[in-house]
Image 1: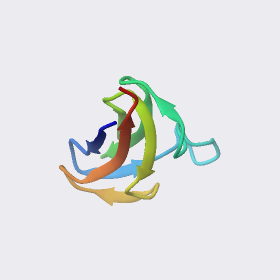
Image 2: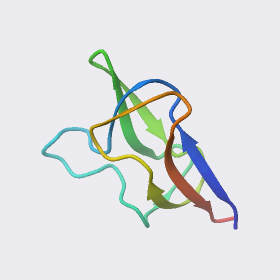
Image 3: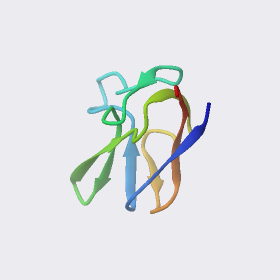
Length: 82
């Protein structure tokens, strides 16, 4: 099994849930598909969905919800199921 890194494509603020009162899109340990939304990046009140990019298990988030991020920063680690 191989591990994949999910990188931020842009600067902004990372959020794990669609709204403050809602549950996270995904939790560590859950299975994801390539197109599974794992979070949002907010840039100037515009939100961009972050997708897993690989199928497997979401092993770990490397940033906290509400934390500022930069392009190329590691957001999450996914272990491939292939």
